[in-house]
Image 1 (cartoon, one colour):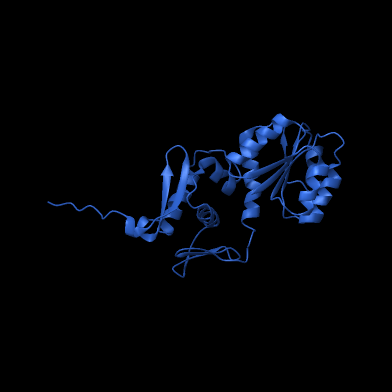
Image 2 (cartoon, rainbow, N blue to C red; image 1 turned 60 degrees about the vertical axis):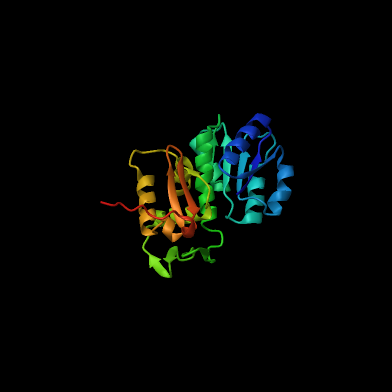
Length: 240
């Protein structure tokens, strides 16, 4: 995803860019809103991160331009020292997706960004099927067909399965998965992520003989990889 950052502090730009690049995104930084505006009009971005405390920034005018260019399809995060409830209400009323208080905390930024981008991911091409071998996703209906037959999936199981297939071969961290599917990196002790992974693996029969393997990388996350069944070693046989 392409993310635009408006901030006049180079250290802050570098911190944000490094955090979002680590999450697999393409980050473009701007010092002034006038430099950002051509990209907005060209609809080049999927998420905006704006420093609300920039001097001489007309945030209302900038958010109007965002809505005129993108409608409500692009999320906006405001970075600010302001912490009053009235400020938050003002930001949301102007069209922002939320605020993050300064000093910036990287895990919070990554989680909030992924939670908002999640809406973008699952709305893109909502009427176009997505096919991965024997699996056919129908986003408009939020349905998955396996060998032409519907698979009964709960809402988050469907989203998790689609996210894994959209990132074939890529290691997805536990924080990334929780932020994208649940909107938070907080581990509540319920092992909900592991339970959902287990259900998706079972319901979709994600085994090498079926062309895909879902692997847990200890302490890091999960990776879904395509596998050529013909290249798998033969099963071992026990002889008595």
